[in-house]
Structure formats: C-alpha cells, structure tokens
Image 1 (spheres, protein in one colour):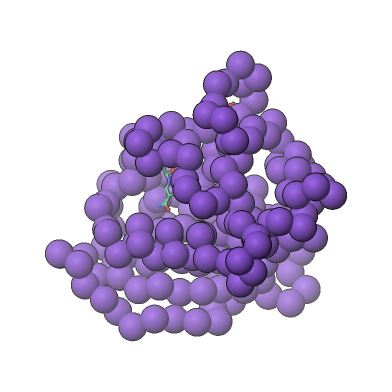
Image 2: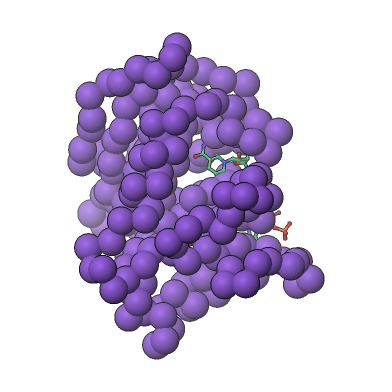
Amino acid sequence: MIPLNIIIAIDTKNGIGKDDALPWDLTADLEHFRAITSTTRSPKKKNVVVMGRKTWDSIPQEYRPLPNRMNIILTQNKGLRLPEGVLKADSFDQVLQMANNEKLKNIIETIFVIGGQQVYEWAVKCPECEKLYVTHIHSEFDCDAFFPPFEDIFESIQISEESKEGMMTYHFQEYKRKDGSAS
Ligand SMILES: NC(=O)c1ccc[n+]([C@@H]2O[C@H](COP(=O)([O-])OP(=O)(O)OC[C@H]3O[C@@H](n4cnc5c(N)ncnc54)[C@H](OP(=O)(O)O)[C@@H]3O)[C@@H](O)[C@H]2O)c1
C-alpha cells in the first residue's frame, strides 16, 4: 500500500477552521505544508493530496490545483466540474483504490490527507494512516471546525523548536501510529 499521512495545523483546542477558511494567517505553515506535500525521495514520483470539496472550494482559484501534486477531491456531487487533471472520488475507499491501482501506484510516493474536518475524521481512524505532520499554533482561535482527538492513537516522534511569526508562536511536530493501534 502507498503510505497515507495527514498534514494539519491546529490551535490549542484542536481548532482548524472558521466559516470554511483558516482562522489564522501563518506564512511559515503554508511553506511547511508546501515542502512536506511536494517533496518526494524519487524524482520520478509525485505525492497525492486528498481533500474534501469544501477545502477545495476554500483554496483561491489562482492557487488550485496545488502544483506538482496529484489533487484528489472527495465529493458526492457527480456533477462537480474540476480542472483537467484533478481527480474526483466519491468515497474514501475509492481514494485508496485510485492511488493503489496498477497505473498510478508506480508514480505515487505518498498520499497526504489535507483536510478538512470530515476528511480528517476518517483519516485518523484509517489503519493505513501512518503519520501526522502537525503544526501546533500556541493560541486559541474562534473555530467551528476541529481536528479529532488523536493522542491515544498516535505518539510523538519529532518536535521542532518554538518559532514566532507576528503575534503567533508555533512549532512543528510529527507523530506516528502507535504499534498495534488499529483505530
Ligand atoms: N487547519 C488546517 O490545517 C485545515 C486544513 C484543511 C481545511 N481546514 C478547514 O476545515 C474546514 C472545512 O472542513 P469541513 O469538514 O467543513 O469540509 P471538508 O472536509 O473540506 O469537505 C467536506 C465535503 O467533502 C465531501 N466528502 C466528505 N467526506 C466524503 C466521503 N466519505 N465521500 C465523498 N465525499 C465526501 C463532501 O462534499 P460534497 O458536499 O460535495 O458531497 C463534503 O461536503 C474549513 O474551515 C477549512 O478552512 C483546515
């Protein structure tokens, strides 16, 4: 199976969004996101980014699809029109099947689940999901979308120094699924 990872930025209460947008403006996090999701060990391969339709809608048109990555949008709207090259899936199983099919599995390195709440809720429970890349923002924001609790299922394997941008402090942390944790 192609490895499946999550990348996410959360506040101190696991808040991730408000009114279908990010509650904060943190350039360092966007750069971190681009580097992690774009980088491959093999120059012949690309990564996949999987997102819910609302997260797709929240990306300004000039920045989507996310370049140098295969974009897969989860939606049950069969009529949804997407730019050429952007793939549509109507279930999580279909995402896994698409990425692991004979044609694609040799050119895909890693699948990154990039949000939002509905999609993260599935991915955290998915036994195939191996790693979390978390940007911890050390403030509490007014949020209406949240990341599910994950500390019982994942353990910390790497933590960065604290950094500051404007009024915000944050750090990057990586987690891996605990051995024997199926969900
Ligand atoms: N902090 C972060 O790192 C981060 C990252 C990403 C997003 N966010 C935030 O998260 C919020 C959006 O989260 P959300 O939960 O409202 O929306 P979402 O997960 O982005 O999208 C939900 C939509 O995805 C589709 N979908 C979800 N599960 C599906 C399934 N099993 N099969 C087929 N389609 C499925 C449906 O689309 P249809 O309605 O078209 O059927 C559903 O309405 C926003 O505030 C956004 O800014 C934060």
